[in-house]
Length: 227
Image: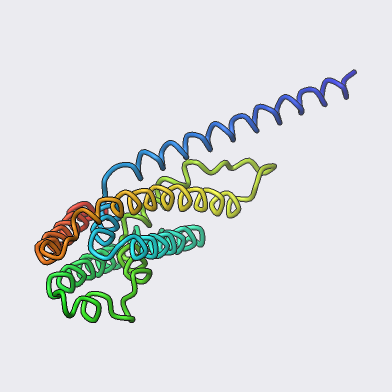
């Protein structure tokens, strides 16, 4: 009887632990959805790039952003993200590199005209994929999410998945959700682009988009001004 009671208790304990794990996972998913649906630099940049260069460029940039987020997830899982969060010098170095890169993209967009657009705005060394990657990987705010928020959803149950495995799973979920939302923004911007890129309106549109990129850079500088 005692052994049977122990088995029942163990079964209930396992069921409760599994239910708790599912609730924590749902809470994490809702947290990521709220975060990613809140307008931010990534969303503004991808919409701006798509309006300027089309849906294909926007989707390539989305893949670049996803790769940057994956790098942050790996860095945080390995414990290097703590180094960034605890080192003001490294944090602000990444921050200002990201701001400077967005300003460079704004300058390239402003300088391009109808005859030189492909050569100046889209050189092979600055493909949309790498633009998306660098604009995201130098955003320390993303690293801080993995360092400060993700650990709160990791369960320390020795019988459950390992801590590294849990961090990897949560990181993959975050990247998947963020990528789906970013792709949706790109597709929506792609629908609007056909109406906004008549020949007579391309130059003014690029000037507007360059200005938006400057604002995105200022947004990134402001939102990451402190750790």
